Length: 168
Ligand SMILES: [Zn+2]
Image: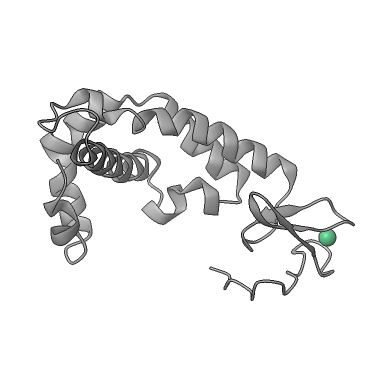
């Protein structure tokens, strides 16, 4: 993992080694290599357009696995209240974590490598895409209940307990 540079310090282009051009945009910091056409956001390592496109495609197919996860559960809180919003956010967060873990299981990649915004390998992004495409929110929920949680705890004995306590 490359360390984040100070806010205005240019990045070195991984391709040509030249310093990036740093711009402040309304979406945040953007770095461009004007020689190679690589770019990145928020000081992350610069990658080419093909990787950016692949990440975007992955997100489109992956995000449907968690972004409306609350429809699978009954929420006791009244819609329109702050408590309801909190419950929805908690369910989505849990569903998102589980979806990444499910992708890790299917692809046999370590879970951090399944986070596409940090993944720069096109082949791995394609692997993530295929796994996400074949998955459904209900399938992941059922997998988690049946065996996923036990599998994950076995893989990560220290991390899991506290984090899962608030999972719906
Ligand atoms: Zn370059």
